[in-house]
Image (cartoon, rainbow, N blue to C red):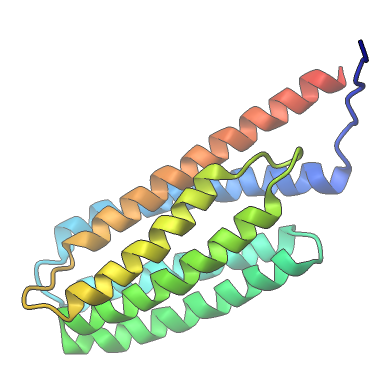
Length: 196
C-alpha cells in the first residue's frame, strides 16, 4: 500500500484559481442580471434593447481581458485573447444589426455564440487538471453555446424569429459560470485540506 503526499499548489496556480473563482462568480451574476433586464426590455428592438444587446458581448470582452491578465503564458491565453477581441467585435456588430430588427440580431448573436462557445471549449479542455478541476461546467457551457448559436441562425432564417431565446441563453450561461466558481472554491478548499 503506497501513501501519496499532496504537492502544494504553486503561487501562480493558486493565484489563477482565485482570480478565476472571482471572475466566474461575477460573470455569472452579471449574466443573470442581464437576462432579467433583457426579458423585460426586448418587446421591441429599440434603444434600450440594442444597448443591452451591445452590453452582453462587452461583458464577455471585459471578462476575457481580466482572464487574460490572470492566465499564465500559453496557448489557452492566446485563445482567451482571441475570444476577447471577438466579443468586442460582436458588440459592435450586434449594435449595427439592431437597426435591422430581430433576424439580423439573431444571426450576429448566433455566429458569436458558435465561435465563442468553441473558444470556451478549448480553454476549458486546456484548464482541466488537478489544480483547476475537470472544468465540466465550462465545457458544457461552451458546447451548449456552440449548438445554440447554430440554432439561432436557423431560427433567424425562419418565419417567426424571436429574441426571447437570448434571456434563456444568458440565464444558462450565468448558472454554469456560478457553478464553475463554486467548484473552483471547493477545489481550493480540498487542496488546502490536503496540504495540512
